[in-house]
Length: 366
Image 1 (cartoon, helix red, strand yellow):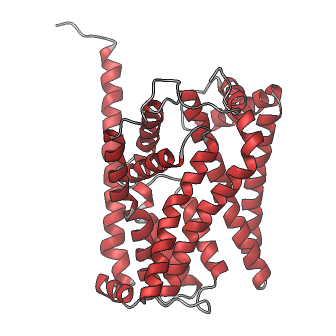
Image 2: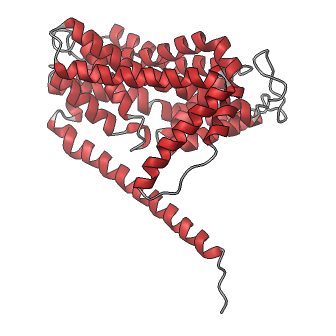
């Protein structure tokens, strides 16, 4: 019997990948079960949550519904800003479909990105145009995620007596945000500076990889130079529009949480909007680590514990958070399924590769 020396390493890699997938699913399920079967019952019951939701007035219900719908629509403006030639309807279909995937499947964020690539490709966008759009949107999203905790902690420090912990946390956050902005500025300034940033980042990554006994990375300087060439024109022309759209998207999500808190009975005397913003901002930072699909379970724990510690009644806080997650996590799932089915059936938007509408922000080589 002969053996194939090439197939053996491939089989090992496939087995390891399968084991990682199984472990990821198991960890996600364990967290979700632990949160909803052990953690939440200590705060409230589903019957109490439903009773508080039913106690809302018609005007409160209508306002909350409008805020939730507006929140779902806001990321459309981000995608249209970073993807010249994309229509608002196409952006809505792509964002809702990818969000639905990200909220339901382990590793759904990566699958959602792959789905976006597929959709954009059938609409005539090249992979490079799609890559630029997703990278820029991701960068700005992370800038806001870093900036909001800094803003919230700064407002908290001004609101009361500054504590060492608040000042330290705000300083660390501000330093991280400033470092990210400096790196982006260096990337866009010149090819030489972009290459230098890539080399420094690779050196730092390789130090960490040596600790965990992983092979070194190569070619990061070429990747950063390529990134600069693709994004310079877009960022210089639309940085303000992209920034405003991203801020509106994040603040709209916070508005839904704040309305949920107020409408179920958590008053400003118990939890001020600044305290709510601080808890919300740090909960959003947690979602940068894809532990569970859409942060399911993890976000609930972060929001409930943080808002309860700020002074909110435990049962009211839990009800508000569950209502918030229902509107911002659960609602996009069936909506995204509907947009995906529309995408599969709709042929009027289909174009040949590279035939998406071009603007002055899309060089002919892309």
